[in-house]
Amino acid sequence: MRLDRRGLIKTAGSLAIFTGLTSRPVFGRSLAGYPFTLGVASGDPHPDGFVLWTRLAPDPLERGSGMPMQAVPVQWQVAEDERFTRIVHSGEEVARPELGHSVHAEVGGLRPARRYWYRFLAGGEASPVGTVRSAPASGAAVDRLRIGVAGCQNYEAGYFTAYRHLSEEPDLDAVFHYGDYIYEHVAGRVCPKGEGGERTCFRSHVGDEIYSLDDYRRRYAQYKMDPDLQAAHATAAFLSTWDDHEVDNNWVDTWDEQGTPPEMFLLRRYAAMQAWYENMPVRGAQFPAHGGLRMHRRLDNGRLLRIHLLDTRQHRTDQRCGLQNTTHCRPAEDTAPSQMLGAEQEAWLKEGMSADFGWNLLAQQVMMMPFLYPESRADGRHNFDSWSGYSDARARVLEAIGERGLTNVIVATGDVHKHHAGVVPMNEEDLDGPAAATEYVATSISSGGDGSDVPKGWESVLSDNPHTRLLNDRRGYQVFTIGKDEWRTDVVGVDRVTTPGGAKTKIATLVTVPQKPGVHPA
Ligand SMILES: [Fe+2]
Figure 1 (cartoon, rainbow, N blue to C red):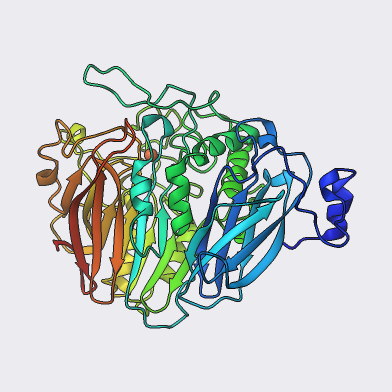
Figure 2 (cartoon, protein in one colour):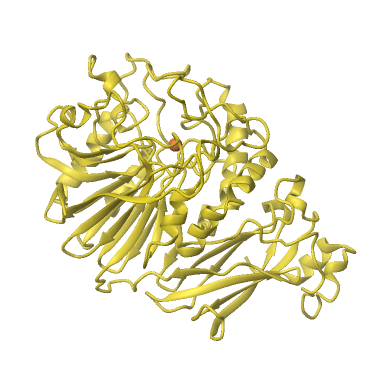
């Protein structure tokens, strides 16, 4: 959004920091403190630019994050070098109280496939410097892309050490975030269980369960103060999505898991979506509205990769009955077609999956492949919050992949706090049969606590799931190194998150080729 000087002066009133706005904003007068405590971020690269994000918060956990309830001008600069000797673009945005003093600068006019550095200036202060790459030109041949995959970062379950290691990965083009960026619960409720079953929190949420816009803003502020998370954002563009905990555990459409009347849950959902927009480096196309927020979108990277960022929460039908703690559900006798993406997004996805790209990446949240868990071996029941609770919706997407003859579809997933890799079988009854796509499921940054390589009781899970090739319960992330002839997935773990400084371990490197879905050792 452009700076409207007249509007700004009107809203600024007599506040001293706005004197002189008729010529240039006066940046010399300080705010209540250093305003860039939540770091900087970039997102959604296009060939000509990206969105740059910050949020002014001199006192992040206080009401209004310590900002005056006034609009405040913020400058941004984009340079070709880290020391800003070659500034190639700059501009001005207004951080408004209506949006929690967040800034989303959509920068265009840049060159494709180039690394840039950026920073913000406000209140006489300069922000930390971030770096970001523009996307390759449309139709360009691209040798290689590197995309990190991360999510599920329960602040209370451990330190964000995995983000520190991710921020040190060389040559990242972007980081796909599969959601659970914040967790909504009251301090102490969801913490890792020790040997004796007792729960231990390693850090504590501020405040009770979050409902209001101010609550959500403060929760984001607490998470964003984390230096490891800030380091990851400063390293590469994030491709941000949400899963359930950005709003409430296991919500779908207009329902939370307690069965709160939809008109009331929708008020909470709207506050949560607004806070998500305010705190994510996303473009104006993702601006929240009363009816919802269009989160699904597409990002092309030359001819090599088309990324379909999906929303598997907002448009689905209710979960099948049988999911733990979910009181509002879809009974077995309801045989109407189910929706995971909703009709509009599903049609959009089917139309957009294309053989014109080396790879199609379905960047989404919940597991698409069927999966038998230790506790479900006896009854063969699947996780009803995943695509397996929506078999007919899954079958429609897989059918579309088959009809187009696509063999280059990769699904990136989070949610279950474990590393998995496998294929999505065309027929859910025939796990060993022909496959429609390859799925890489990334573990969590912190949710679940330290973990172990193979959790107790999970020894037979790989053989129960013959379509999968990987199981690991360490915290961590994945990195996709994408070339024309090979998709390489580095599976990374950290040895502990319950104390700072955990060491990085390479768990596996797996490979997929574009001619046929499958997971192979490198
Ligand atoms: Fe999670």
